[in-house]
Length: 299
Image 1 (tube, one colour):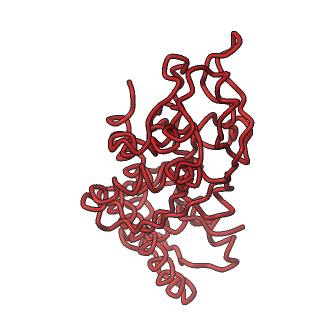
Image 2: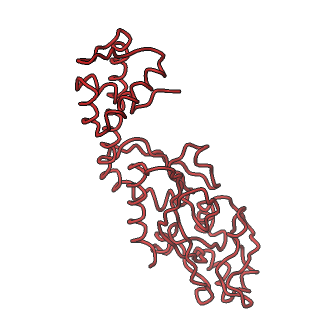
């Protein structure tokens, strides 16, 4: 059985205070409790650390050697605790963040200047992946997930909700005409996703339903690729507001089938494993994202 910190603290306290009675008072324990702790420590080590007389305690040679090592261990633990406390007051260290490429480019990157100004000691590592990753396997602190969550082992923090719109470039509409009904989409080039198939169900009222399953003429695995295809005039696409806000403001993409569009908000969550107290660098990053994104998303 390994020596515990409580046993080390009791042993050092006895030496520093000069007696078991004084050590018990210092540690807010009973005299008998401290005595038992010392006996247990000596039994584990298989040696005598202290010679006890009626008037004083004296270290054995082994006790003198062990005392120096015990002090080093307790000092190291105290230093580690102080460092963690300092990090909670002033968050620092590497923070690995993973998100789909469109969200990283259009939602996170524009916010990083303000975050880094507030927390200059946090070293950010940004990774983009359009597929869901295993956070532990990829050594990731925070993952950003768009849409319904499926992994119940993760702790989730809602960040924002963004509307979905059916959009096209003016050049495409000029060349191919503007669809006036959902049925008109059958005569257009539609841009969809390779996976998941749920992204190819657009929030359009059709035949009594609240969504419409498209047959894409073009498919892409990345939302950013879908956006670039739409901007290039290759067809009509359905995308979230966080990645098209600037395009719509400039008129590079315009919404179609607005009267038929269902008000559907796509949730965005930060996910992370939370077995104990959350690291300060993760907490402040998630808090910052939530505040900034909620200010930009619909209420």
